[in-house]
Length: 185
Image 1 (cartoon, rainbow, N blue to C red):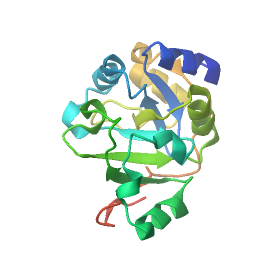
Image 2: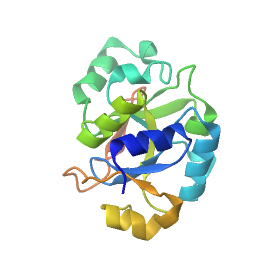
Image 3: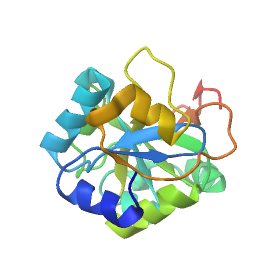
Image 4: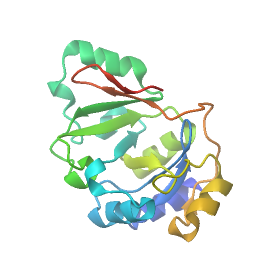
C-alpha cells in the first residue's frame, strides 16, 4: 500500500503505480518517460500499438498532449460539459505526445477525472498520468487493492490505498472528431 506522496515519488522514478478510478483500479505511469511506458506495457502484457489513456485533474494539464484548439466550439462545449467526470474523449494528439502513448493512432484518449484520489495524484504530480485498467490482458479488471495485489503482485508494488468510485463498468469513450460513442459507459 502507498499514499499519494509515495506514488508521486514512484512516478518520478519512472515506476508503474496502481490507483483507484471511477469504476476499476487503474495502472499508470509518467507519459513522458519511454522506459516507464514500456514497464507499464510489460506489466499489462499489452501491445504498444493499442495506445493508452491519459487522465488529468484539470484540462490545463493536457496542454500540449492534445490539440484542443483544433476542435469546433460545439465539440469543446460537449467535452467540457462532461468534465470532470467519467467520460474519456479521443482527441487529436498534440505536439507533446509520443507514440509510446498514442500507439498506432494520431489521436489520444484523455479524461479529466472527478475521482478524488486521481485528482489528488495528478495535482500532486503536476501533470497527467497514463491510465489503463489494472489487470493482465484478457483478465477481469481489479476493483480493490487486494485484487491488484493478488493479480499483479510484485509487478506493481506501488498501490495507492483507496476505493473505486461508484461506477459498475469502465468509463464511456467518445470520439471528439466524429461524435460517436466508442464504448458505452
